[in-house]
Length: 268
Image 1 (cartoon, helix red, strand yellow):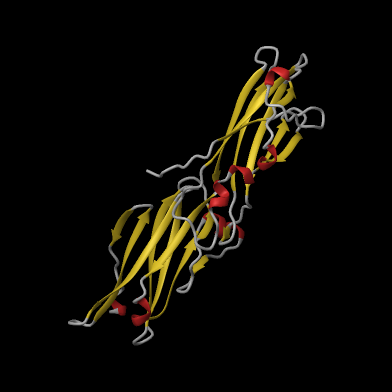
Image 2: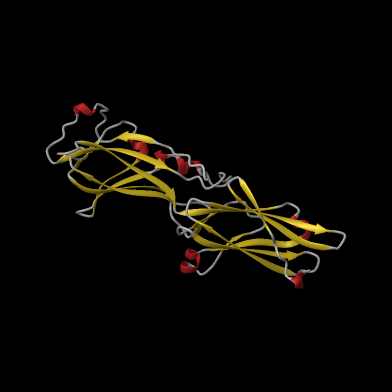
């Protein structure tokens, strides 16, 4: 079970015609007939694994960084847009009666990236100030990608001249017909765009240093956005019989799961 670290920031917002009220006393708000007041509640959940040393994932968990947009569903126009950190002075949003969509997001979406990813969420709501003058609207944001990490044991270099992992996803195949490669010297996680319950393929490539022979081990795993897949790869050498192979464990946050590795007979 993933641990979801929700960051709740409650803010009350006011759109006059073009201004935000800085008053926190909602009794002072003048609500005209045919209008309603909306208070915003927001949560982010980007908890698919340990934080990267390369990418500051904490920034994605801070709601102050998020852009918030409100769309009028009837006119298909954007009523308002703001960065959440601009709302340190609380107010409340006054909107005309009608149907709206609230969207919040931070980052950018890529098929594969090691420097950025998108966390987003949206919700629909209806304003009817005649029946409900004030209401709270909440939105929950999650990544649109999964997080992928490979940990090669430091002893791999003693037995293999090269070793790397290639990842294949639906989005990679559709857009670029290629793979995301984790090289033996890579340290930054891959953030790969995923569908819900998507089967991802990881192909482990190893080249034996003693004779240059190579082989591949293919593993598949089903993941959804905001989930992580860690591969831990270690060399196994038996000096008595002179055999060389690898062991693989996968990690889902805290639970290590060993995998049996079958080495092709021609590689022995």
